[in-house]
Image (tube, rainbow, N blue to C red; front, top):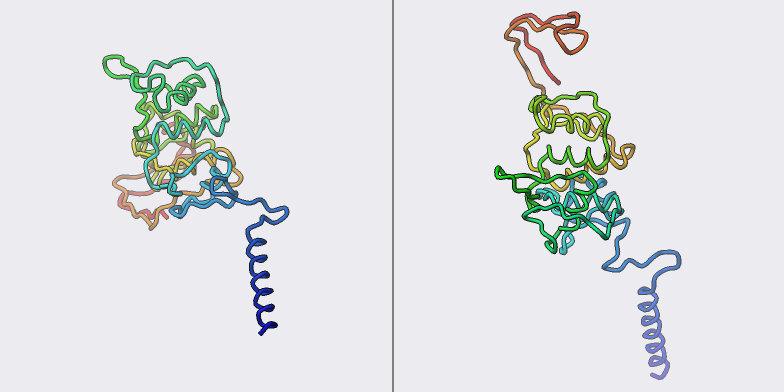
Length: 262
């Protein structure tokens, strides 16, 4: 009986020691607390653009919500987009000039970030018909607005004149969208559209930023239709050496011919 009692005590002591050791951080491996950011951080609701989102999260450019989710398909607000750019720039300034927005006054949430964004020159805000300046911080950021703020924030000046079917030359964001496409940050949607007025999702903004910051790691992928598209010509279609009617014809597709776009 005495021997059994001693063996039980020894076994209990070993179990306690193992529990203590298991809670101690190993040498050379940092302990990850609940409030710390890890390179292995993962958002349970992210299924697409995961690498891009992790890339930005590891650099503390983006943050999730208190419940640990990222809400990838939620629309990104204009204020959140400004915050992400400023975090990447790591730009801080103690004295900030009031941009004079009626809806973002000193002391309001996001005032300092918006004012700094204006001072850095990548946002300007909006204006009512009566000439009142406002920013609309909780408003949805459109794809056209995204093209402008990224182009201005990162000084993208090269422009190859890339066009999209739904963005004509008179569109206010035409130059910004073209420069963004020239930098291989976007190539639009299948069929040659850009959808400039469409609200931007949080995951898509993360994808654009990741491509901009690390183009070698996140190369753009071709936009191809999910299935072949068949067209029938309603007139003779001339193919020229370059865009524009002033260039020589190098071939033609006759009237009534079907053309398959893969």
